[in-house]
Length: 257
Ligand SMILES: [Zn+2]
Image (cartoon, rainbow, N blue to C red):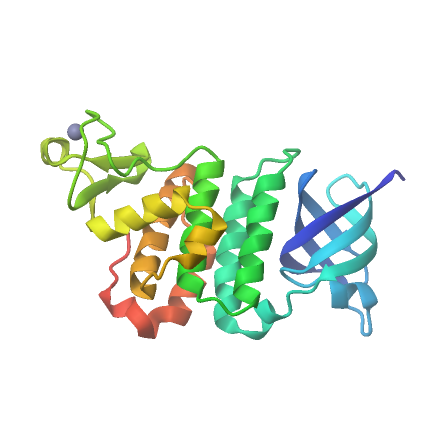
């Protein structure tokens, strides 16, 4: 059987059969890989110990019809910090789901891979999740060419100031006239739109230097997640997990949709 080597991030794992583990991997040069690690759930299993969610690994795989099989694995970075904190796990899960959902099979993904790695590194060193996630989503949308238009109306092109009406399905905001005429658009406070726009254009250093209020950052992350959901045409499952974990913080103020 032909085999190949690659570096990858483990983005999702699931149990398969009695002793196997199903893996969704992202490789910088090969994009998404659907793989299986045979015997990974036997105890003890060296492979099983390495192939945990969010681990960065170097792999030797054999090509299969539905799944590729993992023959050998070595850890580059385990990112155990992301599995030891429920909150870090939830933020990393949203980033992993978003990156995976946007990557087509056989499409190389070096920028997405680097962005994800950088996001895991920040979460692992204990940076607050809200601004990390907002930056990740803003950058992911930009890399993919889906950066929302925050400053000019998507219908008439006029500049928009103050509170905007965001229309995820059209990838940007409406001016008051267009919003009134169509009755469309969800209100987005000015600071949220400004932050989302700023994060889409900021490099990592300037993004980290921003002193962002966590509540504002989360509002920007939610708005950006709505933009992403419109692109994917489905909601993000992992965002529900994050909401459950965060419910005490701001859940009561939220009204979905
Ligand atoms: Zn307009």
